[in-house]
Image (cartoon, rainbow, N blue to C red; front, side):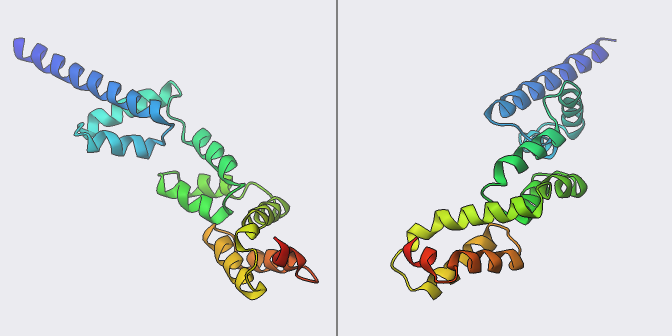
Length: 170
């Protein structure tokens, strides 16, 4: 009887400690369920206790992978292409189906406009360089940001324009 009470108190203390740690992790920035679970296990929390804490935090809405994924994709869409957003979400533990759904939410026109904006913002850095060097650097930048090859070349051609003035003048 006494042993059961001691075990129950120890389990309760472990649960409280894990919950407090999880809440402190969530105050820094929102996390996915996978990120929070990983942080708890890395801290040395028993996986069963971590799962229970995660379940409770999800039930009260403090951990919401769908909301996290949508907010992340919306925030990053102006800076990165859909493929880069998709990869980042999957690395954070978002399911592939949800990551695909939110990463490719903008239409082709929105993605094209974002790529143009990224390209235009980068051009002043390369002012004075030969147009072929600027085009190569721009293509590399857009590719690293997760834009598809066809879009990269379309944006490079568009920014080069018929006379190359935007590339030359930044």
